[in-house]
Length: 271
Picture 1 (cartoon, rainbow, N blue to C red):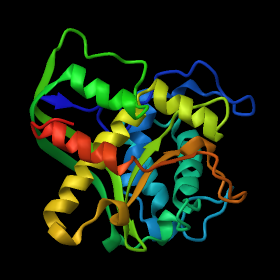
Picture 2: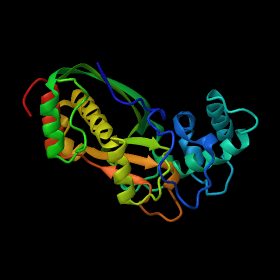
Picture 3: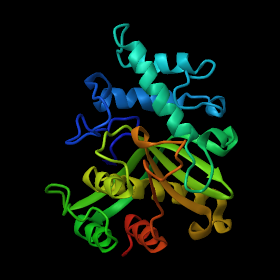
Picture 4: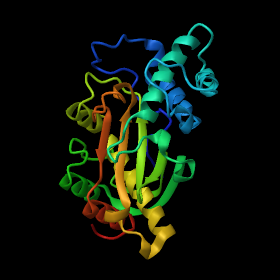
């Protein structure tokens, strides 16, 4: 079987080589442990409750309890819980109130138009690793990787967990939360982070998983170019809803030709 790095923070690096100069580093809230807590807080958040939140505000209504429970499950005790709640409130608030490229905020997406923590699996027919990387490299994905150790082919089940899928204005989106600390959060820095951690490969597989699900559910009514809006990777520490820039948001829509070829390859055909 083939499994992507699990969602829920488990793919967050333990430490980044560089960090923003204006952010005080607190090792208690870095790495996998904090990443899992942040993801849990976002998974269980009442999105609509954050609509009027602004930087510096406390978490609305019962959201402080949700955040405290998420931190507590990861072993954060009384000595760090207040600092953890303050930081997590800021990151959750930023993620839910920032304007996404398509013009909507997550806090304004109705509950019936989004689904958190979708687990997927699909069968892989025997795929030559060499053929897979020929396809990926031709489209500029994971160019620095040449293989998966000594493995010559992939087969079995591809499994993974998508943080959030949502629909807006007739289009479906895949969204992933990241707690990585980067030197800056402009497009170049995020692109480097996406490539360094191979999040671009992760985003591609997530896209294919949703593509297959939509095709199964909608049949001939589904068209990738028209109905899939793209992937949204939110680097939560770099988001600033007040400024309204694209900093902290990596948006990508894989080319239809790449998705079609990858779909065919995984189904046992030739890309």
